[in-house]
Amino acid sequence: MCAGLSGLPALVKAAPSNPSVQRRLAAQSELFKEQWNADMQASPETATGYGDYRYNNRLNDYSLKGAQQHNNVDTFYRAKLAAISTDGFTEQQRLSHELLLRELDDRLRDYSLKTYEMPISQMDGIQRDMADLPNAVPLDTLQHYRDYLSRLQQIPRAFAQTIEVLRQGERDGLMPPQVLLKQVPAQCASIIADDPFLAPTETYPASISFNDQKQLTAEITRTVKEQVLPAYRNFADFIATQYAPHGRTTIGMSSLPNGMALYQNAIREQTTTDMTPAQIHALGLREVARINGLLTALSHKAGYPDLKSFRAALNSDPRYVPTSAQQIVDDFRHYVTQMQSRLPELFGQIPNAPLTVEAMPPDQPGNISHYIPGTPDGSRPARVVVATSDYAHRKLLSDETIAYHEGIPGHHLQISLQQQLRGLPTFRLHLVYNAYAEGWAVYAEALGKEIGFYQSPASDYGRLNTELLRAVRLVVDTGIHADGWTRDQAIAYFRESGCADEPTIQAEVDRYIAWPAQGLSYKIGQLNILALRERAKQQLGSRFDIRAFHDEILSAGSLPLDVLDTRVNRWIDEQRSAKAAIGDAS
Image (cartoon, rainbow, N blue to C red):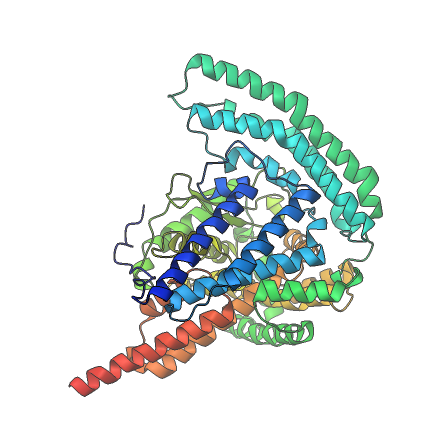
């Protein structure tokens, strides 16, 4: 599944000959394997997503005891890893050591802050995870169908454990906002009405006999009717009558006990920087002003006196209003396809990993388009899931940009390359730092401009307007979680920016409330990559190769921004040294 990657060099060099280094390196390698296996055993649903089916018949342990046990395991492996000296290791071996330490430190800090006690929102939570089971598990053999049935039978247990955690969060004063919690029962009702759990019984692989199909259909149907749907109804009733009424009426994280520490921790994890909310807010205001300047210049170029009149003309033009949900999906497919053939102009290494584009299920109204990785071996394709609800109030103007962001050359290209890197410990193939991943995807949106796309003023408006939305996020997220903004204030600022339609504004603001600091990662990561590119261009001059630069950015998987900065600086120095060597030889 990896055409185009055959020339990718292994990233870990041969072990040094020093016996002490060899022993420590072997110990580290074994620890990486043990820790990864412990993670997969503790998170069977994650393992399935990675194509590891050893625990395919189990759901995660959602209990308080399970969280504590996972923390104990993290503490154990953190201590063992820290005891291994990296003296004499290669750069990649030291980097793997550092990255796992960071990952474990983040988890331990999250546990100490009890972030796990608020696992439910309209954006994520068990109610949505379970509804995606039919799409998230393999259904190609009789055993895999039996595994699926086993997971369905465990759903009531998982809901009961989640309720246990939510009650503890309430006792600790760690409550999500009411405005978000009130959306969860409606989500559950929509899932119950749609009943996605029976979908696997509609078609079976030819390898499963008719009698087995008949038996599976009967058992799955009975389990869904008698266990799964009642568990959803019970959970929805609990949220509506016992939990949501106690949700906090303020929306900012700073209103929680130890709230500013929680928010700063979220900033650190999402941006991999130590920027303060005030610094990020100021950056957002500067970026909003800069991008508005570009949009105003585009308006003048299109023949309009100002941005307001240009925006009004585009928003009232029926050509940019979808006539169906399918039109939006078709738009995304078109843009992903047209970009695919142009990738060799931008990248030396191009994965050949399958990607599907599909409409978002009806039980997720008002949500935002997103990407779901496939398995590394390509047996289950990656998915771009497109938001199409309330389509008549949406616009087609940003479809091209978001297709590049979620598909290629954004998330799908970056994550597929990472999954297929050679010579790295397994955890490195799946590690995600949002500032890197989302920063890359925002950076990738503009690459279409460099190869001749976005030629019309309307399409270029869609690109810049989407970038403006990412700048607005910096202002609104910090406004909500550090400065005490209300939801109405956040919506008013969003509307004033003009960068989104009403369904998007409502969904975006609720998203920032649910995921503090997550929205900050996009612009901060993009600006970092742009700065690295400009530095490389200035220092390498005529030897700067955009394909080589992109391959270097993507060559070690997801990284914290400071680590990425160090790697690219080293690469620039190597390129300059090679240039100097060529000059000396001539």
